[in-house]
Length: 232
Image (cartoon, rainbow, N blue to C red):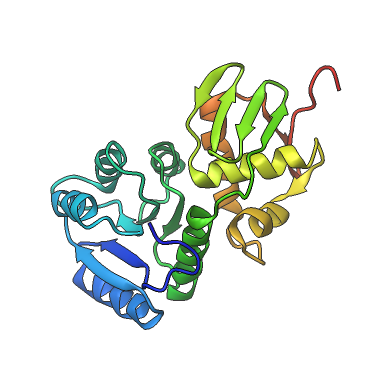
């Protein structure tokens, strides 16, 4: 896994069956300082991920052989590699399934190369971050071990993706205060605009699928907050 300050170039596996898109993404990422390999179908993607151990996968969903969701499922059954899903599908259910399988972010085609590069850097930076000391955060039945990045809710282990973990942590640390989507994009993703507000909504929905609806409340027209503990 790539670490901040690592002298080697981070490696990215691009999984895309359209040659023009694959070539364009590869050229841009290499120009941005990444080492890039390309796979054009599901089986080749799984083999490249498991044997090549890239630092991050840019994964199209519509692939020959089997789709990107199955690629993500098979890879994450053996290795934890950050994934950014790229898809022409604009269905919330596809995004939720992808996030549930451990994808860290997603982009919908057409997308700008600048945005793709920005999201790759954010995900890599997040996956490379380690906490200097152990710390446990507890709130209303939720326990976050920020050193080992483990979570449990009412005693049951919850598997959060790195992005979901950071999103929950930021909301808990706000102590019930309401955070707008723009504020969450800035604090969790490092974005300074509101173009990714749907990303926040999709991650919240994915978290609710794992914890139920009681942990995070929606403040309509404003944003999100954690529910206040009954004894608060």
